[in-house]
Length: 415
Ligand code: HDL
Ligand code: ZN
Image (cartoon, rainbow, N blue to C red; front, side, top):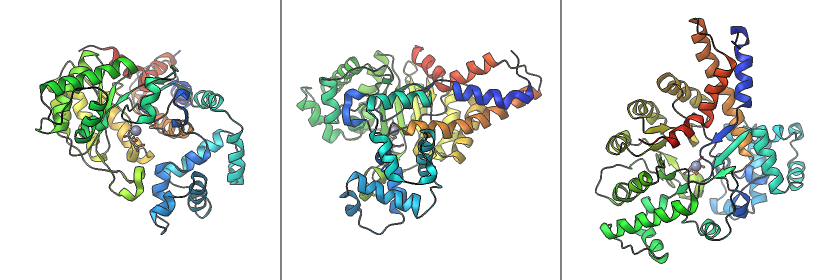
């Protein structure tokens, strides 16, 4: 049925709110990974984004904060950002959105009462509740075989849950070969420090073993702003000599998450990572040199966004996604999403949550959808002003593309 112009906003809101979501990058885990899955108010409050924001108001030694219990850290963050000040930032406001969506009395500001609410849940029921409320079809995890606690579950104890799909994460392999080669050797791969032909072949065997074990949607790595290929260095040699061939063999994307400056402030630990403008020529080179490979890319610097969109126009084997981390703020999401639609139409994935805490699915997607609706209303209004007739079915089809459908088509394609 054709949509009337005056109904457009209402219909777009309904469609965006109701379309099931494929969340293409998260740090969530299914229940077989035990405590690796974070959830509940104390995890929400001690999210590293909020740690960084809290420490800006305090003078206590970082060590003193890190020595506190999780609950003591949460109490301090709650007092600093939510009691002594208004939670006006994106991440602090997100906690309020979660509490409100769960039906808790936000006006009470009673942290203890919120803790009581979460204590009533078991994790399985809570996963069902959050996925249903956030309308999540499935999430893609971040699965790192170099994290011992995770590795042992993969070796013995992993139980599949179709709502949590794996992704093979290999940062240490690419970024810290000088250390990780010892791990591979311990695990029985005949590798040496020198990246000669036999070591590269064993790295391929390691990757192949984990692809067969995990059946990942993609192989991923977070890469520094200095990441540059081709280069005579370990990362470049491992990517071209091992990752690219294995990704092509299994026809799965290599997901490059580029622009993280690790531990800019080491005292903040995970909250200490920052951002740097990265090198778009590397993305161009890889897409051009390996046309039978698929590249799934997001970049962290706002200054890389426009050129990344243009690069996606040049290479059909490049699929870009998400408003990552320091970009995941309304003012920037609006800008990035508009330029992507204006240059790529529906051939990209506008958002992922990057959720580290299960409950964040509620706020990260609610906040994003508000902006998605505004952008789509503008774009479809312009079309309708030129006489284009739009049906609800077509709108549902388009939003399904944006919320994971085009990504799933990209996964099926063999170039
Ligand atoms: O490397 C990554 O996957 C990043 O998303 C980091 O995990 C980062 O700490 C983060 O959570 N960003 O949102
Ligand atoms: Zn992430």
